Length: 310
Length: 310
Image (tube, rainbow over all chains, first blue to last red; front, side):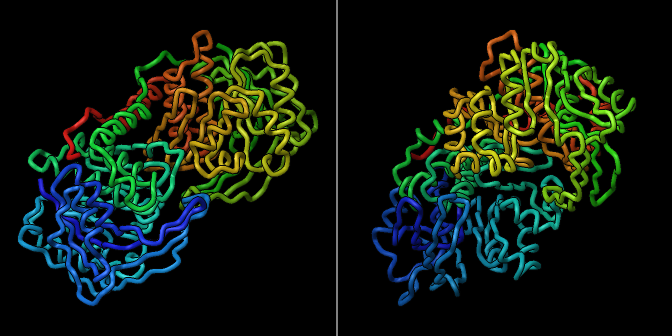
């Protein structure tokens, strides 16, 4: 029941129509691990600079995240991202990206990190994702990527995807990766590349999962108050992959993966309720289970056949 | 168990990447009625020209659609629309729109059409929707509209919406109508305008329904072969409103409306499998019920709480 995540650790500055924050704990590995920590011991592998201090470590430790594999680069600065969301939070503008210590990040996994039975490769350079996958003994590995690598390193990305059990992408990325506008066909093509589980995220509309057993669709949890969507996708992945990690001693059935999708969806819905990781840091196990139950109430219907006029 | 639909009756010319048709039976009232005919006696109110002949009437009669209220305008031509879909069928280009007899359409409801206990107002000029609603005795009325009327006749449209029980719109229309980018808030604002049921369609991602009881979300049925999406929204509405009409003697509960959403989703998924109304004309009751059952298999998950690390 152990999980390693490799990705970015960041400070984010976020502006929305209703507020702003200058320095939020962020980054894909952070958002992921705060969610996955509800399910499994999670080790974070990623680089930080001198500006990453006790307060940030404490935020991770408070959720039991293992930080032994966080690499401190002396004299360096932590990855910094600044962005602005419009009133329609689907519209995001990047204002500043300083890669800093992330620019030359070469992940080095400790023996404990290698031994984790589940692995998540957040969005980093695909060759690095491959080398981490090679050194990991995980029996289930999932990978996230983004359009940028499709355009600049397609071959490497395709090779990285071939090495994992599960790909988690946005719908536009799934379509671009496969040059296939139909999602069912796009997912089929991705499965032919290697992964046996394909998760396609639709943002405010929900997500689909494709396996050999068929398609699973789940709507997003309906939230009236979206404060800051930053990290929603990584939080979703943390809930989904975390759930799988918690059941690493079981067969990974479609039923198990569907529950994982529900937990990912529930956790993502909390993440957007406040800036950065603020909501995740006060979240309780009971709230998570309650939201999964609510999510089921959102989706349930009676499908017994009715008399129809043929 | 009777239903009146007021809307367009058309000939469509459709081009896709894989084929084309020069003259398909189409129009909102036609697509709607072919779906609703599985549930309730459906009367179509709309205008046609001299070019609308026995073959077209036969297509409607074969599904039991009542055509007594179709208005034949002597010397006129039937509404004609030509469009082209890209390989990504979400991208549609209108090539030609000839309103013809639809341009000066003034709906006149027969006594039987007025007495129907359910009414669907397809996308026509909002003042006409209002006058039809006024003359109808329906206990449940639903309305569809589009961005065009929002821009050109917002006041009339708001008045028409206030007069109905249910609004069925696309997500962009819901957001534009309410100037509210968050869908939960947009639906809340629409309910404050009058309707107690708000259905928001997301195309390939599915649809949500909002009522006082909460939110229901359903994904689209996953279809690998989308041939022609023309009329999918009206077919969805026909399944949804048709289901409500079939149960007009019952209390309209959330559970009933959720089943209606499932039937609308199932019927829309058939409509896109062939050009125009071709698939709907061979569809059987058993296929419809089977697809609703499949749709449930797509959406079901176990939500029993699991032990989490608080």
